[in-house]
Image (cartoon, rainbow, N blue to C red; front, side):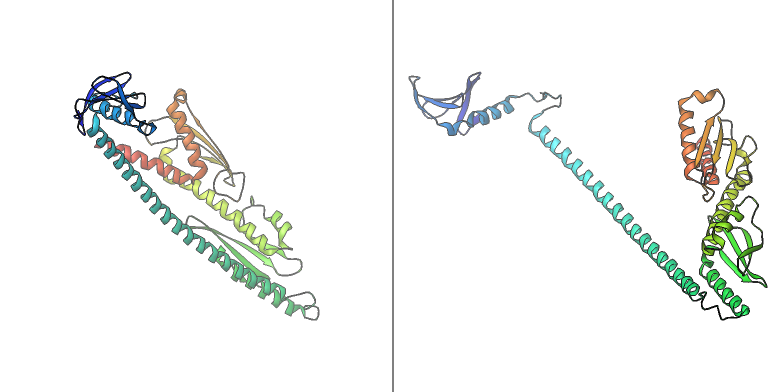
Length: 364
């Protein structure tokens, strides 16, 4: 190899020698110094410390030129010279572009989610403002009827004031499922229940507007603690009483709706009867994950909080000797998670969809 008019003479352990074209003089680089020898072989001059980097640079060029094409680096990756190095650089560039595209895509998705979050927050703030406004309206109507104001009023006037107060409450909470009408004794409150946009049963409570307030008649099921709630809130906070009753009735209607859907629409998955109590706060049943022959599971769903529609404690167990299989154990754990986070009929609807996908794969 020739480098600026010099040719490599030899490479040894002590350094590299180069022969130039200036009258046969030989320059030898050894130990960070450069010696220039004349015809007699004696050193004529020595380069200073500034030349210490030259041996490594020239030695690296020499090793790159003399290295075989199929040589490997200590880490096992082929070296391959300049072309291989260019290929590695191209691969790194492609990887960098791929990562950059993934980052941009993630940023776009994050921006979309951020915009949706902001929209939901604005909607939440609007709803909160509407609730505060309606509460202020009810409070204003309540404050307008003070004991000292009714001291000089007749009994008929006091009754009319209370009727107006009751109508204001019903108008304020109509959007929650509460409505009502005036009766000869006072007011009849209607509580409409719903679950997942399905309108369900309605219940009635007739209140007598007199001191103390009392319930004349109602259609609330006996297992709902109506008397307990009335003793706690009816005289002191009628709004709290109505909200608590509405919350428990809606939760009961939602649990009952899920159990009815399971018995009616997904009976093919059940291997035995669905057992439930009157409150639908305890459900027990055995089922299969598909309508065909497979491992049977037994499930027990407990609703300790009577104001919720999702179970607070779920237990799923495999039946038979197949329970020893690790795959069935994984499926059992996934079923517990589904029952804890999704309504009952939605879980079995997902089982049905998985069975349809399996049937289509077998046909194809």
